[in-house]
Length: 256
Image (cartoon, rainbow, N blue to C red; front, top):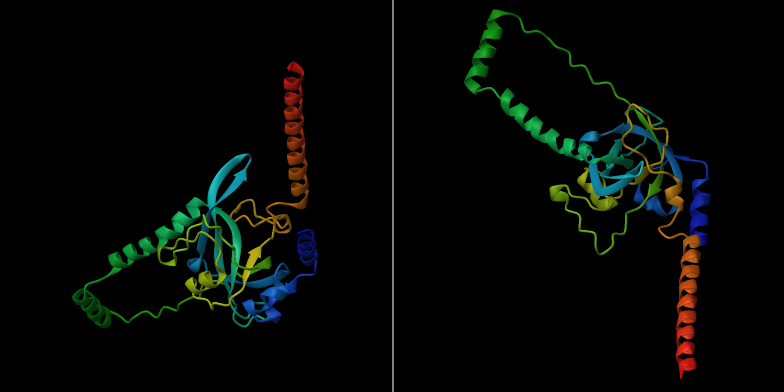
């Protein structure tokens, strides 16, 4: 385990790689895992997926939330952009983020039904506009594209325990990170890479998502020092119990 942690730490200290120079595919996962990478693109927020619930302690108060994973798509005619979409685990967000994302499709359906016009009315409107005045030519303005630079670490899928429920993509329930399944559900190729954002420069005015601390990638669920502490604790308890039992038996013999 110590060698594994040293390996991770050494990899994380290497110079970040630029993903724009290589095809982002899981075929490179073994050579890229735990390497810092830099990638630029545009977040497709409409295809975000929420994995959880995941708890986070803030000032001693535990709050449930989710990891939000969003496709980062290429920017046309931009040499610094990724050449193919990748998944980005942007970090932890409160439950309200997920609830709000579920409400957006319903609001769109309501607005589309309200804006629907009967065929006869639309024909009359078209006829009146044609004969009353010249139609106005309206030029559609393309929305401004905000490019994002992500500094992160290439990660693989999580290995859930037997107590974790199975993911249910149809109901948008994701309990653990399954990179190929999440990629397909997001409309990306199955072999897409997952980048875990570790950029700690969080904007105070926009604190969410909260990226993962890079130190948690080095730590294991049980560190070697913890193993040593557990061993010493159990040996101390065993010695204490043995001493008490020996003393008790000695007292019984002396009474006889």
